Image (cartoon, rainbow, N blue to C red; front, side, top):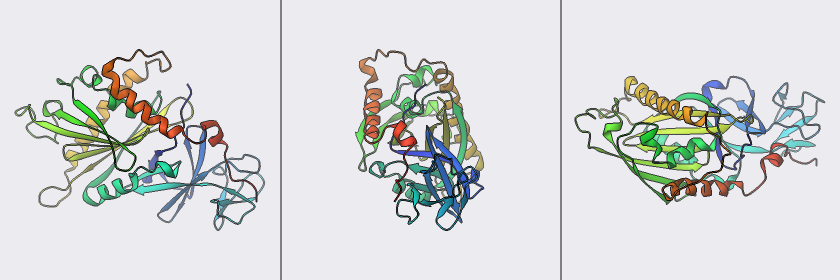
Length: 316
């Protein structure tokens, strides 16, 4: 199954998973190495510009460079290095235990400010990881399909959703859900007050990263292609403090993560048994899906996935 390599943000892991100074990562066919120095992270193209070795497997750090395990050349980390060979750096974002990598600066789209502000006002909790045999962009696209909420997730009422542009290049999907569909610790008395409306706002940063607010709680979801037709889904939550300023209860955190995971498990039954390259016959009700697919095209404006997978800085 072919996979797109869009030029935006990807969540590549959780900080708790990174134990070594050099860690191999992958975004589709793009091989990366993640460098951890104290509490800072840097992501670089992992392909050696000399003979194509993977720098994260056997490479060792040495004063702003990594020693190639194949021939021992010093490979400068970043395009401003003085080394004969060098490999490009990608912007990284580490916030609240989550790790993101950006493949093109023109598509930053406000994620850094959004998550830093959220981390300052909420308790951000790294969540769970799932693997799906499906295109990565389908995970975010799913939220643009209002009809599936009734058939797949058994909501009694279809949410009313609409699109609007964000201030930083992102796409906003907003609307109303109803409390009867969310009978959890996050909405006490949902059954007694089933008509209560819950405002929803999804800030779609890239084809692969979405920050969704439902009521007072936030879900951060990322889907990253693995290069083999599958993708890795990572989901985290952010919740405000209680009225007395104390952290939200562990029961409430577990409930939100549990319900988020259940929703993805319901989706997986469809995603993993769908023919992804089958011809589509979309209807006027699928206008939000078409809008998302058009949004994705903005992230294909530079190098192709094949070229990027082998791109390295040239020799001086």
